[in-house]
Length: 213
Ligand code: AMP
Image 1 (cartoon, rainbow, N blue to C red):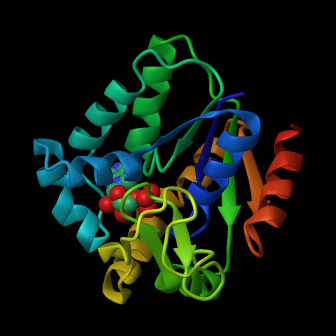
Image 2 (cartoon, protein in one colour):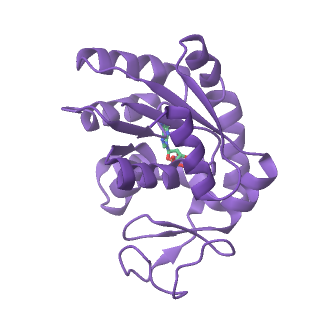
């Protein structure tokens, strides 16, 4: 099954993708992770993208679509697209890319979360710089308080785009650019609305139910 996960920032796309990878052995493609890796490795793409990520704005389509096209090369079934598409032009580009590779999207899962819960999640979120694992200062600190549970790394930091000003920008970008995708996928009969509030395990069970898997 091929799916995409979308929703407002902080809806839990990354967390739910990790669970789907672990339990259903799906392949995960996250544009946010690809950009963060490029920034960490100081590649030309990373240098171009950094300012946009830090400010919480979308990286221009010309750059993003090219990057995704490359990442999706030789894609096989059972993938999760996390964070792409984020606007209608990217959704059209994705249709073309999948057509070229004779692949089909089965479900577009939209995670719904109230604005209050989103702000609470994002402002308390911390991320492992080494492996990208996600934590929360109150709800999900690393088990020993210091080391990443997944890779043992000690550099657990607050993403620049989880600072208050960038969170506001990301919410505005989401409203203007990404929310319209709901209607786009609804018209095609691919939209699956999932309540993304509460614990990650509750949300995961709702996703399984929505996907029938
Ligand atoms: P995420 O990890 O999905 O929250 O993405 C982090 C940031 O990466 C976003 O705020 C954007 O700056 C950038 N980004 C990720 N996906 C896209 C995309 N599809 N189009 C443009 N920018 C993106």
